Image (cartoon, rainbow, N blue to C red):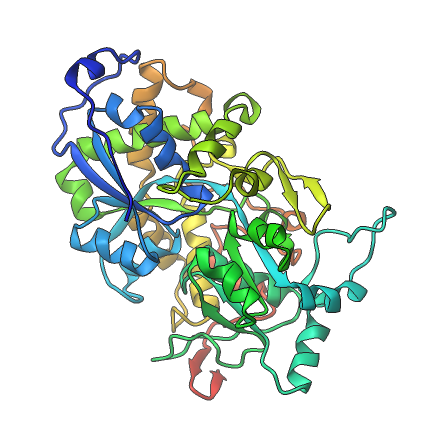
Length: 455
């Protein structure tokens, strides 16, 4: 795999224009992992802009084959930290899959995903979608438009299959959320069952992000949910149509995080702070001056050592627009958010949403009380580290005081019903009540067996 090594001479470090508080680092040579997606951008920018070096960190960035390999690398120490699915630190900490205490002091971005279907499925969906006055489809598109298509496939003896990137990925939960909001059951995980297809109307399976377009083109799946640039890649290749973005499913939803083991943070507190400082600065750079740096970021991310997709494909979503089908380009300025709206702050309420979705679909087999959700979120998401790093940046004049939520208790205000595709508000302070409000999904007292939902 391509490696990028920072290794400048001491004279270069001394020439740095930034006069930062230099922490006494416990470890200054680090290897950080990532998957080839545009939302790994804070890592690339922290490297390219010299923010790691400003903190005295010599960093190797290393692309990983898939999310499991990446997580295993962090756990076994091959990687010191990584760009992670937000569900990975939570799942590992509660023992779903590989068990390990992973924490996150930094949330990497908001939004950034989409759901794409094949051209065949799109043509079947279109008669079910209202049109605007200009003849283009009305957005957001509900999965209700997909339901008759799924039924037709089933009547013809063919299962309707869709791809997502990992069982505890945002993509899995967003795809399930969208399907359920349209009346389609995406299936449940049961005891000893890792497929999540029990009672499913639509069969979901894991496909690595860069392989999504080719898997769709081969007909192995009929659609997928993935981060960019792999939705826009389907448009550019003429093999599929993105029908909805996650911004339309849940406005300004949390996406990836930066994950490290709790042991690493305990043994290397100053190094953890230094990493967090560099990543915050990268996020600020990505969003500052109304995204003025995005074109430069696109050029960086297009390199083979990072995302390795054509600049045009990455720019299609990274610079404030999104192309649904050929020629249908719409303004979506917040499709990728890296700093504004407190995107980098690790909110407990974001963690709790992921935990509710794990419970909703059976990955957490038994109902939990609200206190369990609060305690679990607080053991994984570490705003204390984040705010300490932010304070140092402000004191050094490298960030604005008003850029951070100093007074928050770690919980966002409830997301209003109009900002979520199913019209149901989300309040992280009331997780069990939220779960009960969802029409499809496990309720209190219900469990999943091989024969279906019981209770």
